[in-house]
Length: 282
Image (tube, rainbow, N blue to C red; front, side):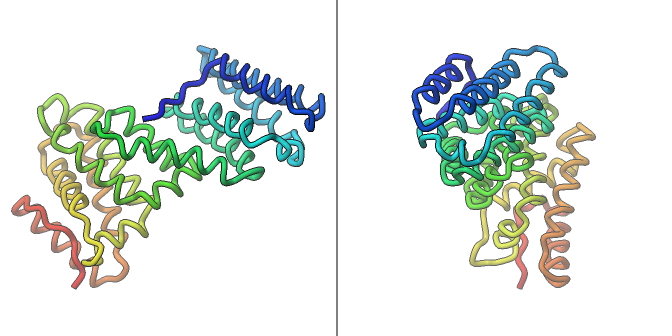
């Protein structure tokens, strides 16, 4: 999987690349230099307030640069800018406010060249989703960030919803393997990503739940996992409550009352027998 890490060396390389572009005025080059400096300050700062301040200042600087000036950047330079912002976003996956501010910067760059920004986000996520290794806690946090705080990331995951659910289902045996893991952050984050998928990608989930032609075996495994959490195999109250919310959210994806009734009946069967029964609307 491609690893993106922010470094001052990368920022310097981008600055040198921009400095060599004759079509960009000196004023714009100076403004871009200040923008990169603020991103570097954000990466180096230890305090939360100083990081937020440098990020706010970087955002303000970027928005002041004329769109036509940014549009004159060569594609290679724009790719580098996107990777730097994306690297900071990946390092801040546990801070929703920070990720959203960085997403706003990516949106500004997307206004200049949508395909380049989308390509960078898509390539990273495809590498993550198609890696051979089972998801780690950090992987789950990254996917949750892209679902919740990244406009383009959510678009990519919308198209890759089935693959994402397969990766989540693949993780379940490891999550339930022992008591410590069942009651630790890995289980909580696994439940959280299920909730986010049901909540933020309802159209894709509906097709896999209620249409026989698109039925997904991984979703069946995920549903059984959530019910096992709710029924007490996990002692963490927060995780059980989150699992209950996820199942309730799944029920709300029903397209009509008949499907909802069928889904509720299937849940009762799983509760009674702990069988892996997927919702089907007949």
